[in-house]
Figure 1 (cartoon, one colour):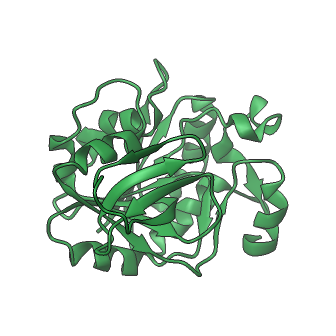
Figure 2 (spheres, rainbow, N blue to C red; figure 1 turned 180 degrees about the horizontal axis):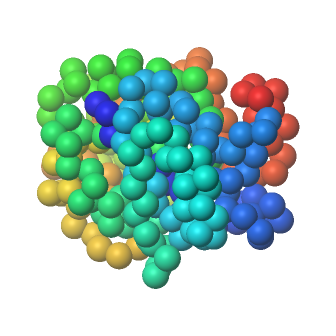
Figure 3 (cartoon, rainbow, N blue to C red; figure 1 turned 30 degrees about the horizontal axis):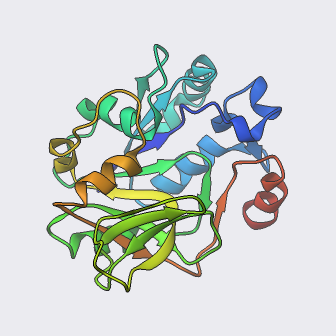
Length: 239
């Protein structure tokens, strides 16, 4: 697998005031932006093409990529300057760039992790019917995905609500999503939503008839750099 997409279009509201003048993708940790750190992370696992969606301060990201000479790989900008589309709509907009038969990696720009992509991809390939495999772990989170004994996606819950795909299964396991997906290109045949939407919403709808799995990487380092106070933790772990 040599293709990935980085979701970098968001407003980074939780990172304000930093993101009032720059996109979250260009927030620096130890002198390197989140975007550069994640491109380096992906290329360390053999990724040679990266699609980046842009909206908030899009020009800054485009200029940064140009300044870095595309990091020596193929980088494609998926332009959402006309309207931000969230994770699902952003993925759908980028469909023309993500047609490789072996599939692709999808990740959030604000995730820092030492998760082994090789192991995650290998696990995905043990599930020949999987439309997607989601990296998950056991940790505190207000939102949890639910999996059956085979680690097949079976629902979602938060502090306020829950959505169950396997309604008669009392033994569902809650795990927090890590913001990294391994996706089959066949997924585009099953996305029925249009416009602005969350990919998790689409996954839960697909899970009614199709197989999506979780890859449990509990124990790995994982940090969502979504708030200014997370920068200090990021410096300690990844700086």
